[in-house]
Image 1 (cartoon, rainbow, N blue to C red):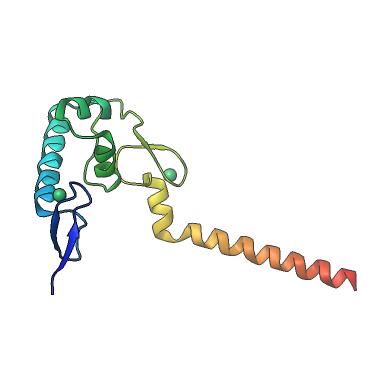
Image 2: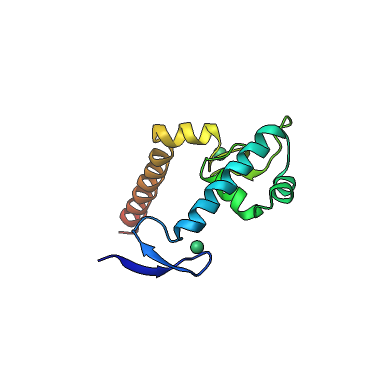
Length: 133
Ligand SMILES: [Zn+2]
Ligand SMILES: [Zn+2]
């Protein structure tokens, strides 16, 4: 049985397929807007999100979402800081993390660091406990 839901975007009733929270009409609109933004960015290198939003009529929030999802890359000449790496705060142009952070996360370095810290604090605690005796 297909589930009927209200579209999160326009409120229209649609058949929920378990994939998206929006109706096919909004989904299509979303796609079209994405294409529009993509083309605009391609033609206007260095455009800021505000400019893109004003020219295409697409919400800044949505443009940011495209960038965060790695679907869109801002090709500014000055590689203007548009969004920040979620880990170190460095300015990036696409995705959620900067290249060094991605590399670090991939190699699992970040995880190892945390583990080591934990180990040290446990050892310190044990040491203090022994001294108290
Ligand atoms: Zn809709
Ligand atoms: Zn980073």
